[in-house]
Image 1: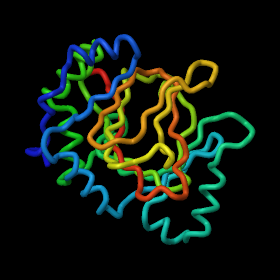
Image 2: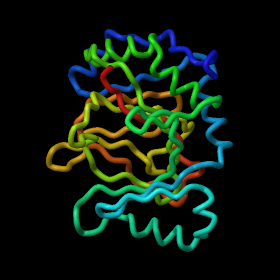
Image 3: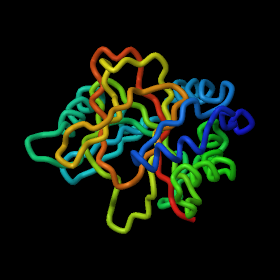
Image 4: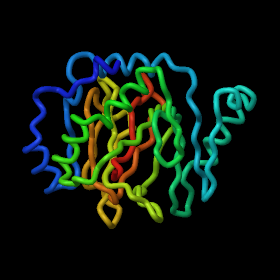
Length: 239
């Protein structure tokens, strides 16, 4: 996968930088040259080691495949229901993930196409592009985790800014082909009052890059979505 990873030659850094400076977000599509995105999608589609991640209220939960098997489908469905947003506003989510590379925790996968892609994101050519587009010369590391949203999964409004956080920007690299807006799973950007300012339909080989902090959410995936919504997500961090 590492040899298959290369930036698409049609990327125009100057135009992207102008758009990012204006909107504090930009989409780079296509991002990878050749069939690198398709190979990564196929790899993630075949993986069975997804961890179910839930947040309800102020509590966060993570269930690995063995724990999910032990709980069974009925209890898992009940847990997902508990994570659903209620009358009280607050950050909540339900989706599945595989950690590829996180600097804060030191977690790092190796020997897989996902690991190779995560390493590519922190390679010199990509870092140079990200610094150019964002204007943040201090960027020196890119976190990465795969995410899978199946029917009912969601991510409510949040800003990616935590106490003591050094996150400069966030990204979502889409790996879902032929997705329709009616299937849900849209990456939505919110105005301060909560209204939707811009939305991105999941797309294949498209890297959506946005400044932190910025209000955003992922709308719930519908019951009739034909395939899971696959992506790789993370943050751009300083050296």
